[in-house]
Image (cartoon, rainbow, N blue to C red; front, side, top):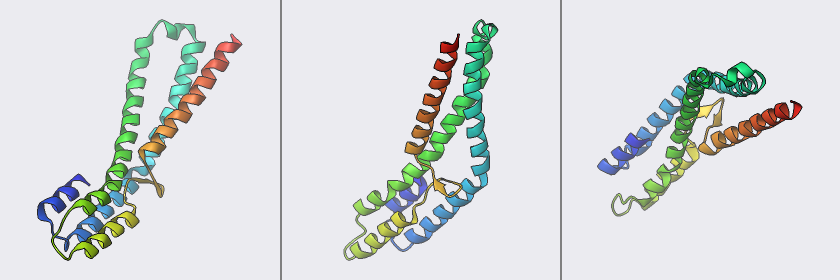
Length: 162
């Protein structure tokens, strides 16, 4: 998406914009479709790993003495969460392209075609898709928020039983 914007700003040629956008959109769809299964598997892994790690830490007294032993799993989990945010950032970048295109001047008499391109880019809804659902930063934040509430509920439930 960044390279597309740089090319448009450098060239200011409306004739090639639609073709370049189609290529970018195809690359995004193909790449997100290729890694979507791995992404979901990683999400499920950390969604089950972190609560079980928390429950083990609270329930088994031996784990309380060795917090460094938990570090590798936490580092991997943070890496997966970062990957989710990077994937969602692709969608966020794609949603900022139409306002950029609308702010550029391509010369006199090109306003109607520029508006066509802005509408085309907006309606194409390019971004990072996971099983035909467009992944956004808001979705990732909601996922982390919900996971945090569940983890907090599990930990308080376990602590109240002791």
